[in-house]
Image (cartoon, rainbow, N blue to C red; front, side, top):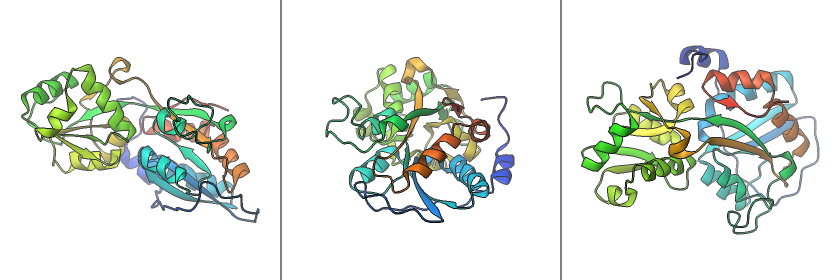
Length: 283
């Protein structure tokens, strides 16, 4: 999709990716006392798994006192965990809605529960992604565009995978279905649609050919070695913006702000760009 993308093998070899670990404790907890070593707790959308792990390794090499506990999942799940009391220093969402629901500076129409978890002054629009259509390798269904997908969904002769409604990639997909005048509920009832709880689950179903097509992010397609057959336009689903912010109850707020600043540098931006993200915030 982008000429500047490195190969998936090059990215994996360069990054030396490690496994991600989840940590759940409390949103309303008080900050811990500073020590020689700071373990930053970063909650991030599942689509950031490869890039943030690589960037965390590079950052840790230059900042020996900093280690990371990454919690990668759907933005909706992460938002709920923070709301229910999970310790989190930095939250990076794949959609504005999930961040807004935690931010007292957001509209009350979105932050319906009046939550005040976000340090609004630290919040930035960090990245832009793309929504793409992928099919299993060797597919013979002729699904080579969103137009073709819509035709097959109307005919109800394929099995299509999308994210759940609380997952940003699912919400973007819902907008695409609306754009084509398709009734998601009716299609699901007819057995034409299956769901993934995050974008990685959708990607896995496509790779395993358990579905005929699915909608994921361009970066996830790249990381999984999938070649998208089409890319959604802004008219179809809007922009895919990833906001990032330090949490008000962050156990290590200063270190989190420093890492968020690093994520806006050219060094981090080159890693994001290598898999298809477009950096939006620069320092």
